[in-house]
Image 1 (cartoon, rainbow, N blue to C red):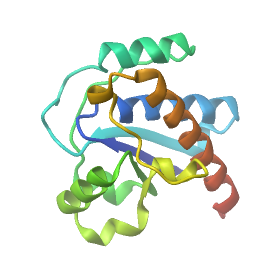
Image 2: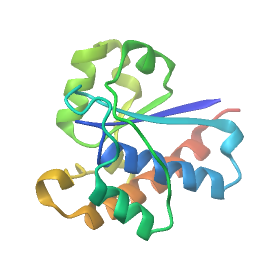
Image 3: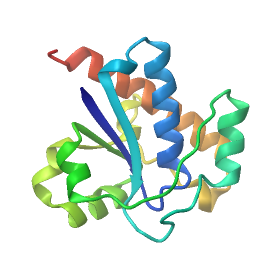
Image 4: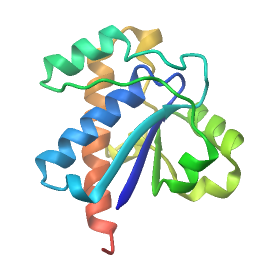
Length: 153
């Protein structure tokens, strides 16, 4: 089982979008039985909240359904994950500070799988949820290609 964990700040916009997009890509590729996919936040400020409605509307517009409740990353999450895909450099720093620097080799920025490494800007601040979806989709596609090229099982 390949464990993929997506992380953003609050776990209500980018990381649940990435979780649901990646699940759809994996399902469409017929690989659902090989993956465990989840998301969480580096902070607990949105703990228990659902996906932010504008992010959910964009997902639904792209034919992706799903529900999610925000939660904060734990040490056990990091230990279990094979890949921790964060949305930006701040998330990377926050995750490593929270769970420990021993996990640094499995923490990647999702935007690094999109051809030109970049942060996925937070639509909470930009209000551009469609742009975030597009960046996340390309990053998820790149991450799945990377995993398929590099997996040994």
